[in-house]
Length: 85
Image 1 (spheres, rainbow, N blue to C red):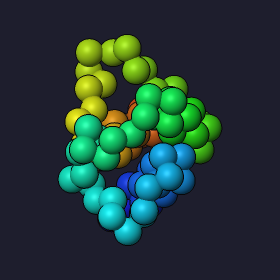
Image 2: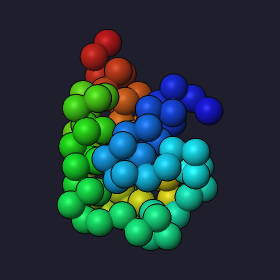
Image 3: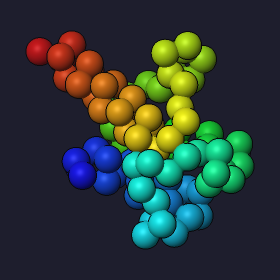
Image 4: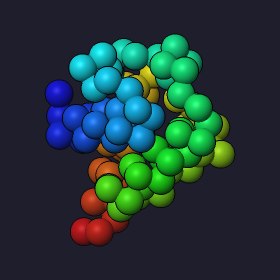
């Protein structure tokens, strides 16, 4: 598991009050029964932690599993790093 993946799962567990031990990259968001308020807080925390903007309205940003979330965050972090150079 990468550092980004670990941090994202930690954020999801904390903000959504879920047991971190039960979260895997293959966990489906719908099955985790995350409330919309918790999901929004999770996104804000991810943005703050990684200093990125998560484009929730984008058609390219459809998230079904925690792997989708971590892949998207990894892509945004890489994009940000590439633009910084």
